[in-house]
Image (cartoon, rainbow, N blue to C red; front, side, top):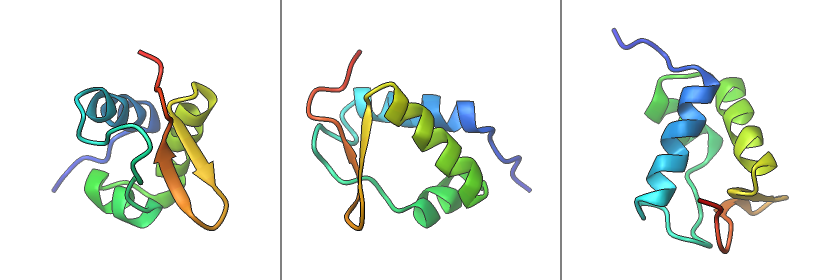
Length: 75
């Protein structure tokens, strides 16, 4: 059994993946459902993590089109 991650840990891991180039600038991120499965977390937990990264300017949400890495994510 895997232990689900909290939203802050998910946000930190996504940020690290972005910094390492797994998700380059302007690339589309997986859906909420895919991220929830990846992190063994609920969709609401993933949404909180994404909202945290959006507030930091790392991720941009486009209504109806998905989540994207910002053009020049802050370091």
